[in-house]
Image (cartoon, rainbow, N blue to C red):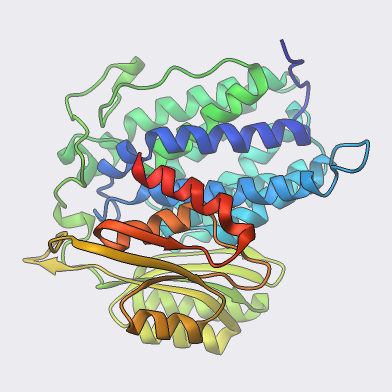
Length: 404
């Protein structure tokens, strides 16, 4: 039996990332299906998975750099890589908040990784996430993160006890979210982002104690003391009640931004006036911006004025009668997904009918990005062209995941 860690060393961080990715891979469809807030677009589980995948890849890169040596990476290097990977790979509202939670933890764990530091890290993470959200709402992942930190506060000195208390505190808070947010109560589900955070903390519990957390049944809501409410998970997003995005902004805009802190403060104010669901996370010159707006161009222009935006993603929310709907055409017989090195080739390939994934220098796409592109291609048969021998295994993993 492997030696259980007395502190959260680099190996434990690596194990945590791996277990979290595995757990989200199992549960992301269930989490997607209960995604009704802030907009019922059915992608919270997928966004969390892609965010953690990027974090795990960054940690693996740190370990790969030590393969020829006799020592493992320092904890500080591992947690900073985890946070940076999550930041650059964050997807959606939930992934952006998770990236900030990990960044808040990393700032403390880089200084020490014992039980006391972990408890402080959880508190710092919860505070950082709240500060990153323009208008925090109770009954969401923010509430679950705060509850985890508060529960861990009473178990200083014992790493296993701190992690277990945080997990149980988060789980109890998750069960209460339908009481705090009316849209969740009417849908009969818990908050999807909070459910994802419980999954991530469950992976931390397993990494530290060696004991896997008890998986919740395939249901949307968990009542007090683990009692299951009668909201069965479906294969798609639930109907969207009014508060969950009906009549809301038409576009989700996400980008990475290189900018000074003072520029970001002005950016926040401008984006807050343009739309809602605003989350800006990061620091030290690199930021991840997420907002829902009607004028996507104005949101990007605001980023240009603040610094250098890149990896810009704009998603249109199709609406009908004030409620979000999925408009799905008949799938094509065959489609092509191609990895290209720049915007120029991406434009040419898109015009030719291909679905493109951009691989910028030093930023190869993760398998989750390729799977996302395969899904967007919406065809019975998809030809995936990685165009780089180094991406062969990533492409193979994406293909296998898509088949599954």
